[in-house]
Image (cartoon, rainbow, N blue to C red; front, side):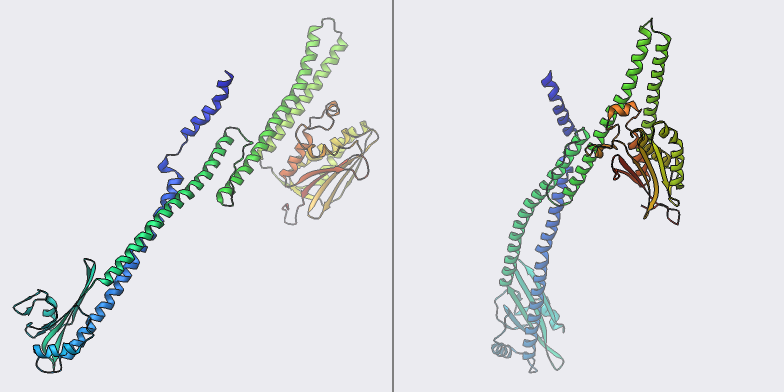
Length: 494
């Protein structure tokens, strides 16, 4: 049974992971990898097309210009006489040694071939049957270049004109496989480079996406464990990127939740203990009355008085718990300009009988012009808690000095007593809820361990704070409640 119970959380966690598992094609890993690969594919596509297009355009332009230039040169050389014959065409072409065209063809005005350095079969009965020749005999310069079957093919034709009369035409044809091989070699190299880049990009995309999803998976697992109540769990993601920063923020949030949860559990435990003690006393006293038939009326009155005291204690604890609940809710207070000295004077007057009953001298020094923007009832409660504690936990014949003064942009309430003081090891915890330095003495004097906590929460709600330190005059403790002073415009600073 114990083994089955121990395995149940593991099965539940596994079931939860299966239920919340993200489909592969919708995962961040796939989306990131596809985005990366699409970007690389677009770059490779541009790299494999743009350079080739530019190279072809450059080749086309240079070859077209060269063919046209050669055709014009030959046409000019042939137009030196009023008659164009096969003999004159052959003699002229013999003189032009730098002609780079694969085929040079010269016709008369009717398209009859006078010179042809090729044996190609695009002729019939000695006539040139090319569209370019017909256009040139019509008086137009024609040139055309194309890339087909792995080679550049260029054609150019110009008329041979003598004194405005068309004597014939010159037709050039060029077949260039070397330039095409160079372009094909470039294309093959680009393709090979692209294959290598694609392979490297795929590997990098997988590695990067794996690293990204691994960090996201760790953070997601940490969130699930935190949601399951493991407030002590922390996400471990190394590095300085956004995921590491997100993990750091998560860890801080988890730490705050852990602190809050520990405080909540401690608060519930302490509250239960504090409520349980007077209830147990009431139950014991009532049982003593009910189960003892021979109890005298004086004892009954004493027991009933004790029950009333315990009921009063329960009432005080309940009221302070409600006060803490309202403070934790952070409800907005109605605020107005309040003189801290006037509120403190009312509290001192209220507690003066208690001080005299305990043999405590209550002295006050309240400076004027110590106003702040606050809720008057809240300030009253802060002053009441601090001064009442100073009286209750003092020694017979002791002294309580209450001061209100202004310090730069703050107003300060100082309450100093000459009691037994607070040990240094207890000083950091005196504002914790239900914490008591001397638990037996606190209960004897009706303390709940909530007064200082309430006072500090109220002070912080008004952008202030409460601190404590040993009394520099000797024995005892000094509490300082500081608040932002009221400015000339009627607004609190801080």
